[in-house]
Each structure stands twice: as structure tokens, then as C-alpha cells.
Image 1 (spheres, one colour):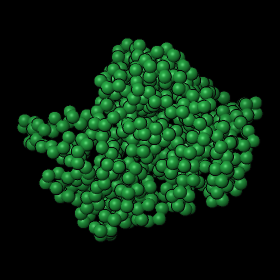
Image 2: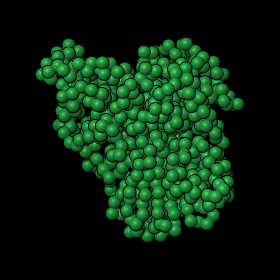
Image 3: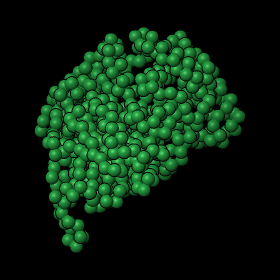
Length: 629
């Protein structure tokens, strides 16, 4: 796990390109404290910051070149099947014309490069891992930049008249000195609505995300982007399996995924909230690891937010070396500036991950497993049940729209809340179905509320495109919801926060639920087996007796901080300062933000903390990074 940078340009000298990439490397120092490397020729410069996980020797440093100097790679991530691929690459298949590759390191980096040399871009179909890498062919003068199937590892880029610049984070591009970047005002409405900007856009104008399952080819001063993997397909591999066979297959795939992710040459552990997902990961780790597992949990003085008692149950059952991190408002305030300073792309949830990542790193851990993805695969969120119930109410479309609007208004007047506002908007839609309801479910505001805040941009353009691409197959509504969740909230919020906040303290996080083979199988399972009568029934049944009943039957809380209290007390002055500063930037409708803040402070039930905190973060991020309009 590392950080990568690169700059391809014919307009800059070798010295200028080197200076720029070295500056980017310095900005990424937190991602890779173990080594700093640069490779340069007349066409481009590649940079690398290393966090040593596999093959700790100097031979694993990057950028890494082949013995003949033809190919060079800068790589961030982990290839979980690198050992199997390495054995294949060391052999020459009879009659194939392939010659054995002679490895000089024990790193997965060299395996990625060797696979590209033998198979070309078809190597991407063979990889099982999380990665973003760039490979340059000095003979053909061709650069390939690729990103993993699910989008666990980030890759940002800017392509313009000056060439192509890319990085594992946005800030190295911002502060490279290449040009002055500005706020993407067209994306601010989307950010306000969803606490993030959906890829391929970012909050910065001109800086884009290389989409998951895509690669970029830069040749003859032209960049082309190609998709090599898509989530928008639901296979039939689970169609003929009984429920028991389906459970056995889930157990097999998840167990193998956990086992693959324990390959490391450094101390490792796991985040343990006490929920089903993280508990399952810890339980499976204990079955395949010969070492005592180290687990980490954040607990709060506010007992209603604390999940620590559930984490202790799992820690005791699997005899882990458990670390409970006690947090008070004053503790959080001390760490908040660090968390905000570590923010690469603004959002609403990052500090949660930063706190537990920092504590884990301070305990001597360099790699940790996380339960991210379990809710998305096994219908763990309320949205799954809502969409399933909505499907049963297709008769609503037969009701005249004017009558539905009247009913929605009446519901809103009786139920003055966020949900009441959303019900009114949903009933007023021309058609009520999964594609129109899902974007509203994930939004912080209704369209009417958002239009009162901001008028610029097209805040629904990207999510509507995502919804149009989500497959609609009979008996697979829940899989469609899974795909929508993965392509919106998971990839653009959860994974982005997990990467930027864990790597801020040089901690690698691995997510076993996001193994693409497990993901594809889970998506192929029909609704009958996954319907959320009880929380994540398919996953629970697949685990057998692994988890105790106290964990299986506990109320779902989610990993969050008691922001509602803090924003009105300890963080009040900080929030007021940033809300006022953002108001003064004239991005939003005049006085709309101050009115929003005052309603929150005065106890308006329709204005939750989540509706204002990400706006506070946006202004703080803009000021920290000198982003202008």
C-alpha cells in the first residue's frame, strides 16, 4: 500500500517534471513513510511513496523497472492472488511462445508488471486485489494507468494542454504547481445533496476520478479511457442452488477472501464495532490465523452511542488482543483538526475512520481488516427493505398524480420531519419506482429544499445516469439496490473515507466483503434468499454458529459519533465560523446557510446534524487548500 504520482508532458523539461513529481511525493509522504522514489525520462516522470507490507526489503522499492529497462511501474495496493500468478509466470506454457519470467523480488509489484508483459491488458482480468498502478513502456512510449474492479484504491487525474497528471490523492495535483485549480461549482449542489461528489467528477474543476474497473491509455499525447469490468451484470451462477448450498458458497468465498487478505509481512489487526460484519471478519480471521488477532473498538462516554459491550463479547469469544479506545468530546476536539487536515476530498464521515485508524496505527499495527461492504452485499441497510416494500406498491402509479401530490402534502403536514418531506416528493414523481425512489432515499434534501439552497449545476445528473445503468432483473431487486449502493455511497463515501483517513496515518485497510468473486456471487442470489426479514439473514445463516446470539440479534447502530450533541456545544463556534464563511463565498442562495444553521440550533427536527456538518467541512477544506471560485 502506497501512494503513486505521475506527470506526462512534452511541454516541460525533465528537470521541471522531476521537480513537480518530487513535490507531489512530498505531499503524499503520509501514505508512504518507508521510501520515496522517482523515475524520469524525456516523456514523463513517475513518483512513488512506499508503505512496506509485502517484501520489506529495498528490492521492493518503486518505481520498479525490468532488468532490460523497457518497462517501469509505480503501484499502490495489494494483489491477493499474486502467489498463484507468480508460479504461472515462472513457467513457460508448452507451445505458447511465452518464456519464464525471472523474478528479482518477492513483491506483488513485480508480479503485476510481469503479468502485463506476458498478457498485456488482459492481465487485468486475472488480478484479484485492490490497486491503482501506472506502467510505462519505454519502447512504445505508452503509459497505462489502471484501477481495481471495485474501486478500493483511488486514482485522480487532470488531462489538459500541459499533459496528463495523476495521483493517489487530489491534494498532490492541487499543490503540484502545474496550475491554479478552482472549485467545481457545478458539483456543489450534488455535494450538498449527497455529502460527496459522484465519480468521475470531484469537487475540484478539472480533476477527475479514474472509474473503478477502467484503465487509461496515454499515447501520442492522447488519453483514452476503457472499461474492462462492469458491475452492471448479474450472473446466473446461484440460480440452481438450494438455500443450504447458497449459504455454503457464501461461507466458502468469504473465508477464502479473509484468508487471502492476511498475507502480510507486518503486524495486522481488525476494526471491531461489535456489529455483524466486523464480528464475522474477526471470527473468520481467528479460524485461519495462527497468531492472536488484535482488535480495535471506539467507545463513547455517551452510552447510547457506544457499541463497546458488543465488541467485548466478540473479543472474548475469539480471544483477541482487544483495544478499546475511550472517546470524550474533549478528546475528539483535540483530534478534529488532524482529521480535517487529513481530508483529501471533503465529505461528512471521515473523522470516524481517522480516529480508529490513528489508534490502530499507534498500537503498532500497519494493516487492518474492515467489515466495509457487508451491508451492501447482504441487504443490511433500511433502503433494501424500503425498496422491496415500494415494489409491492406499484398500484400507486395507477392513482392520478394530482391525488398523490395531495396525499403527500397531507402526510408532510402531519409528519413534519425529513421522512415526511421525502414522502411528499416521492408521491409527486411522474412515476414511482426503484429508479426514481432510490436517489431520494440517499439524499440529505428534497429537490425543493435543495433549490432553496443553491441553483447552480446539475446535482442529479450523475446519480440518474447510475440508476439508468443498474440492471432490472426479475427476482433481483435487492441485487439492483446493492449495485446502486456500491456505485454511490460505498465507492464515493465509504471507500474514499477509508482510504484517505487510514492512509493519513500510514495504515493499510483491507475489505474482505469486497472480493469481486464474493460480490458477483452475492449479486446472483435471488431476492427470496436475501429478503431482509431479519438483519442480513443470508450472511448470518452462512456463518453457522460462528457468531453468538447477542451479536446476531442486537439492534443495528452503525459506526457514528454523537455529532448532534457536539455541533450544538463543543463544536458550535467552529461550525458557526465556517457556515458564515461559506455563506460569504456566494455559492449558495443568499442567507440560506445562515437560516439553515439557525434552524438546526433552534431544534428544527427537519434539520439534522448531517445536513449541516458536511457544509462546515466543505468551507474548512476550501480554506485549508486555498481553493477559489
